[in-house]
Length: 71
Picture 1 (tube, helix red, strand yellow):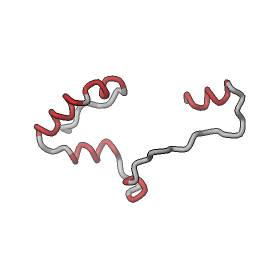
Picture 2 (picture 1 turned 45 degrees about the horizontal axis):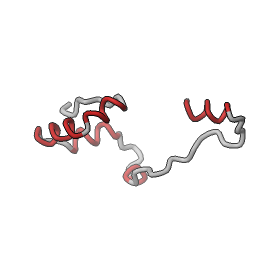
Picture 3 (picture 1 turned 30 degrees about the vertical axis):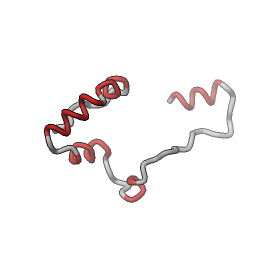
């Protein structure tokens, strides 16, 4: 894990992880929610899927996201 590696390199022994800031509150209300399944169910129309894939194509590539939103 990159964070752990950095903390080790700077010899920071008091913290073993970083807090998750800007967490989507939906996960607090639905702790078993699977993000991938949620978004695949949210985008149901082909025009919606095409719009998301076109608009965020760089993000899908950079973050290695699954571009199969239809299944």
